[in-house]
Amino acid sequence: MSRKPETGLLVLRVAMGIIFLLHGSMKLFGGRESFVREMLAMVGWDMPNVLLTLVAIVETLGGLALMLGLFARLAGLVLAVEMVVAVALFHLGQGFFIVAIPNVPLAYGFEYHVALVGGLICIALGGPGAGALQEKIRSPSASASMPGGSVEGGRPETGP
Image (cartoon, rainbow, N blue to C red; front, side):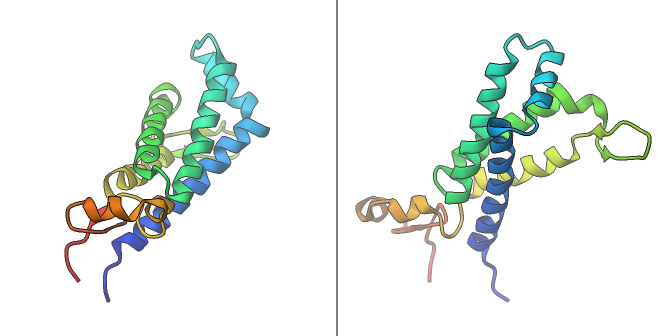
């Protein structure tokens, strides 16, 4: 069985992109924006509406960038930093697990965020993988001038 790291990065990139696109869109266009606004106000942020909008835009555009494979490394890094900030501000004090027990308030632990940050760091370090739009719009002269010739999945070719 041959290894296909570029295909693995593609699957990871698209999955992460869907998650962030939908979470950001929900905050922008309705859904849980009041919940997020309340959380921002709860930690004492003076402008929860501005911060909510900023977070929603970052998640929506970052998710779209990941799905398309445009600036995927940068999007992965920015979204990973956003998730670390979210954990530090809101989730760290609620433990690791996301727990739903009958008659007990839902605990929003940070286990989900750890998985997201891990995937986003893989994209930031490994590149967008196969099928990235950025590779398709890159000019042939730019690819030819890079060491190792053409670039696939964000890494120079190393052999046949």
